Image (cartoon, rainbow, N blue to C red; front, top):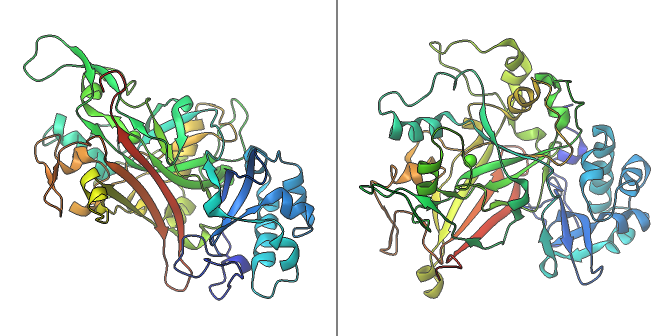
Length: 439
Ligand code: CA
């Protein structure tokens, strides 16, 4: 399943403008998404290549695709990715091979494929699919240690952390595609020194830099997904920003998990990088320290240890209103690596279903904040400012403790490996705007 093939060949080039190596969407990537354009006046499913989008149904109709790949497209609604997400991996591999062949320099089907291309600049990018369910994990040992240090100095990790990937069920109704404004939430907070809570706009607004896991093939209720079968259920990866109101969170999560501090908005990138495109970037899972207690067998396998990780470098950019006014470039706040994540995607899927829980096609799993060991690898402000203790100094002289109205946070991602063409994830961006009621 993890074998390299012709679609990963580093010498492969596309005839589509903007697809050169170094761009986010070279021919080795081919991520899936959904878009709206003047041509169709309806949501459509497509694939990003260079500066363009391939409309999948137009490509099949024009004869640019053939065989099981074209059949998979024809069997899918033109406005929803879920049909493709549920397709057998062999059909998706055939589709990827067909797209790659028709988009490559010298392609015999170039003229047919040309009919199905649209300039991406004129398209509105949409949510890949409305996820039936959304689960958010807490699976980075660096994030858990840094966040736990605030409540339990000297003993940051709770006893279960080494044994299972912790998670809570999130709110799918407020998942949006990149570009949606982040309306500062109102909520109940207990200010320091106050005897009673008050209802007000959050003053501790934060981002969380995460990876989105999109589920492909479902499992049956009562039928757990084994660790080594989990990759077959993973359609692809994207970027996810779990916007968080820390002041609301501190007061409400006693004793249960996140609620209104998280469910006002979750932003995801519109492009889903397929599991097949990520094959060259698979790396070993994080090695556990000798002193760490052993995990139960259902979360442990030779295969997961050998290639359960993914070498994806993330980036968090901040653009303040001042920077925008003065034409300054955004500042990169952090660049964490997903390969440092303690629990792998396969372990999250295996654990999620071990009790028989059914995962549905299009379900969204957030990996939890991705943080690394270095100071420039922290995936949220809470870690950077040590829970409001130390404001960030920005290069233009501004300071930030928490996000202010007018701040724009953009997540990016890129997989790189020597000997291969790197692939990008596009972006997941959101602009913080004032609370409506109090503006
Ligand atoms: Ca989170």
